[in-house]
Amino acid sequence: MDSALIPEGAKRCSFPKFAIGIAIVGAVLLWGVFAMFLCWFKGLNQTNMNDYYGFALWIWADLAVIAVGGGAFFTGLLRYIFNIDELKNIINFAVIIGFICYSSALLILAIDIGQPLRGWFIFWHANVHSMLTEVAFCLSCYFAVLTIEFIPNILENRQVSKVPFFHHLAHNMHGVMAVFAATGAFLSFFHQGSLGGVAGVMFARPFAVREGLLIWPWTFFLFTWSAAAFGPCFTLLVTKITETVTGKKLVNDNVVHLLAKISGWMITTYIIAKIIDTIYWAMVTAPSLGFKLSHFYTNNSFYGYWILITEIVLCGVVPGAILITKSTRENPTLRLIAIVLGVIGVCLNRWVMVLQIMAIPVMSFDTWALYFPSWQEIATTVLPVAYGIILISLTYRYLPVFPQEKELNTVEQITKTE
Amino acid sequence: MFPFNFEWIWDIGHAVFFGGLWYAISILGAGMTYCILKAAYDTMKDKGEAHH
Image (cartoon, rainbow over all chains, first blue to last red; front, top):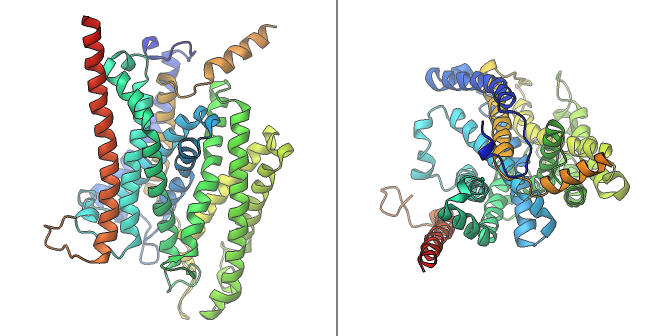
């Protein structure tokens, strides 16, 4: 039915099977859209946010998708600026994942601001003393970069590329992609960093506040670093999931090993910096503000030392060690464990930096303020996941996303025949 | 957002924030304009060559 649109030589499931899959995920998407409209028409009283939790599940989801979407800017930087040629085989997919992550982040923000029709105020009436204004500027511009990076892949669709203008446009865009990738890296450095900077400058929140360099707290650099480190893990994870679902090998092992190795070294260096930062904060910063480390991890039913150990050791040191060691990195099971732990680790870091901050009592008369999101918040957070699955399914079916797909699967077929 | 907005002030904050924003927008705009114009030129050139 849609065979004319499918990339030449690629095998895809039948259209009815595809449509059923999309319909199932589409139902989840509609649930999220329903909750989204509830929030827009009835207001933020649909959420469990309150005076303690002005930043809640949505802002965690926002920071988490931006962190894991960092794979796009970092892979783009490596491919186009550092000229690592092997990564051309995964860059399309990294860009699509980044596009999904950043469009999801913008969608979540559009729900979170409560008055989406006034979203443009942040540009028109900008507060030039706020790190979040910088985040909004860079986020919007970087989304434009990702859209530009995604367009050539769309134009390479079998039918679209038959139009000479589109064929030339895709070719020309590839030619100047290094300029867009460099702009993207510049924008990502600042918005990833500023998201961490927001936490680090909150001097009334001793759990978050950090010293730093000039106007930038250490969390600024740690956030950028962690996005560059763990973003490629998410790219590899989604690639693995796509390979499992389609039952095909889509990216050659040498590309996966290379990206995993780079990610491993980034994670290892990041986690060393994070450990130093945590020790300095626990021994110097927090005590200077009158707080002991135990204040942040005791006397409540959820946030214990386990969260600190899980984030730093289990989801930081362990994946870093696995990915920098050749034998463990090249073991598919251990590599998968490492990238899953890495993705959990960066999401946990964002959770701690958004929600644990809000939970901890600051004043002497305060108590821990725990929060559980409403179903509307959960549905609107699941919405981007459903949207992501649908977009990946569509791009995989109709666009030449994986340049090695044909070659890898032909070889596999020959091996099977032999 | 623009110097003609009533709330605009010529200070370092506006210079850094909006300087950065317009710089990024200019690069993206110039890059896309170049690609579109060159694609139009290449398409016309192909058509011209086909006629000969």
